[in-house]
Amino acid sequence: MSELNKQLGSYRWTICALVFFATTINYLDRQVISLLKPFLEGAGLFGSDPLHYESVYANIVICFQIAYASGMLVVGGIIDRFGTKIGYAISLFGWSLAAIGHAFARSPFGFGVARAALGVPEAGNFPAANKTIAEWFPKKERAFATGIYNSGTNIGAIVAPLVVPWIAITWGWQMAFIVTGAIGLIWLIFWYYIYDSPENKLQNGKLSQQEYDFILSDKDELSIEESKAAAKISWFKLLTFRQTWAFFLGKLLTDPVWWFFLFWLPAFLKEQYGLKGTEVSFPIAVVYIMTTFGSVLGGWLPKYFMEHGMDANVARKRAMFIYALFPLLVLTAQYFGGYNMWFAVVIIGIAASAHQAWSANIFTTVSDMFPKRAIASVTGIGGMAGAIGGIMIAKSAGVLFDHYKAAGDIRIGYGIMFMICAFAYILAWTIMHLLVPKFKKIDL
Image (cartoon, rainbow, N blue to C red; front, side):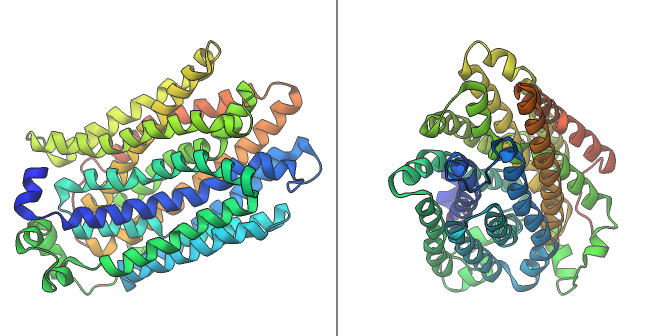
């Protein structure tokens, strides 16, 4: 890649870095509450009955996910209509203010409102990010670039457990929300001065002609985009395509696994192994460090297949099938974790890494199948599906864990949830393959 960048220029990777940091902030802000859960319970902010804390927490999580799903109904279309630069900036400004607003909540209702306020603008990150990558990268580099920016989810998840509990212990849980929320406002400055379309960057001399031509080197895409560049595409039109439903169902089945790990991994380590406070920080950081490698590898493998002569469709499908197999290992997490906690941590890390590898590719299937002017809208449809799945898994987890905690063995509840996580990807891959045997660009 370095030799290619020397010949062409590398401004597109600067744009990728901006999207990476936005995604890092996105996941940092949404994970804070899972790490502050013990602090909020201890302060009596989840009510007075410890037997219902899990359900209260699940309902707060669901408030975020309902709002996130609702945001997906409109945010993708707004970004497609008004453009990436304005849409991304509004989204990040909104969720940064909402993240700070958590500091002023004093009840489950207050945290529910704050989570809802966070969920709507956070829905803009992935539609805007996916559209940015499609605008700035040719098809053969998109999965790799997506894997890089998507690894920001892991970095956010690594930074959060290392920093958030320490801030809460040192300055109070309110400052943990304020400090992390304020970081997004700094990103906006860089976004405003650095980002623009490839056409505008070419005109002002920031982008070389060679790199511009490379970005637009997919002739099949160029002809489709130019032929109907002004056409508006409604959700109703998009929902008539099997390709949309393939992405919808793929996200519906697999996104909940990531939501589960994100919001309940600290609680699992606490319940199963008795970790307290900052003791959970290092195991969680290890899991998300592993997922960083999974995310980048997820984009690299199909690129490697294509560079060695494999058809793009076969390369994408084969890589996704390989990644779908690894989560099956989570079925053994509690068994081997009975010998040593770190066996469970590593196994969960492998499963979470496989999710990120899968995620890098399922996002890229949108640009494989749809023209650029529809990418944010289709990504929004899939994001809504993932959020709906997240709502279902959060409610299920809350009910299961309360039930088995009352029965005296919450580990059974985690065992059931791990079974769901294990088989989700194989099922999703099969459904996507049956709906769309070949990922091919459609003409809208």
